[in-house]
Image (cartoon, rainbow, N blue to C red; front, side):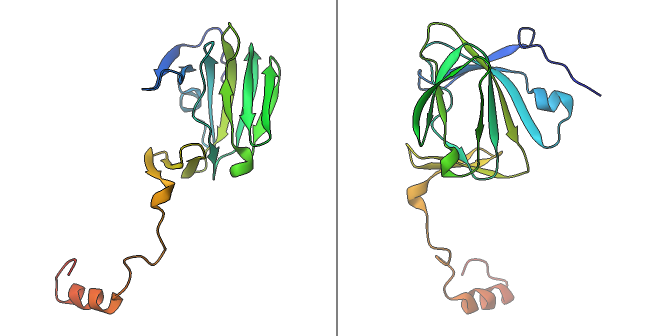
Length: 169
């Protein structure tokens, strides 16, 4: 079954962060409404002077923007460039796919945001050094990264404690 969504007829909800520069209007979860299994997509509207999400990239999700109306500045690792109505931009996984939008105009910028959804994703924020485990929204500082074997020493003692029924000895 086909699902048709008109950008001028969808219901938008304001998403305002605690930082005033980050605010956007987003459509209802169109992918959920349509029953999509592997794509997430929304129509977003970015007000003048506002930024989209913080500068970020995904480890396990590709993303695609289609500018439906207006224009915005796109920041990527290669620098900044202007996107205009009709432009399509693809973001690959990993650091080379990092991106952020700024509506530098005096009119809203509407765009279709399409992402792959194959389960867990890790979103990284180079400007702030955070990582986000999606879809759980578990956010951590990258600086807290530890060695794989941290806390794994004395494994024989842990096994022996478990056998005696003692937890966390």
